[in-house]
Length: 109
Image 1 (cartoon, rainbow, N blue to C red):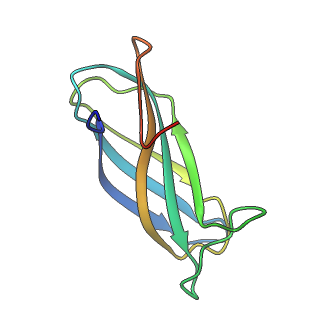
Image 2 (spheres, rainbow, N blue to C red):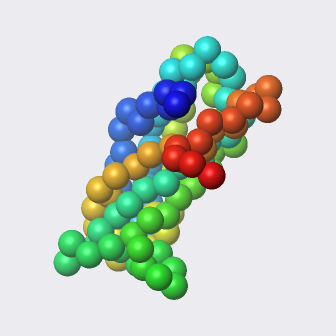
């Protein structure tokens, strides 16, 4: 299995009526990246999965299509996906598309 080309450097959750998640990340690869799909898991004040739609699994995500050059750092902010999120428990890149059309993904399809 190929190593993930993205390193999550920092994650912050800004609490408000619509919580926002801010990620700071690094392209560790030797290739230009065209887009990154991130996923995160958050919990509410009762330590249960935060609301994020019909099933309230606590998992939500965002896509960065700004691109990253090799060894470049990037950052982006997204709405967390629900109003009850109080803490981000985990964040990870689920898919990376390189500029040359190759791709990397976490897990199996």
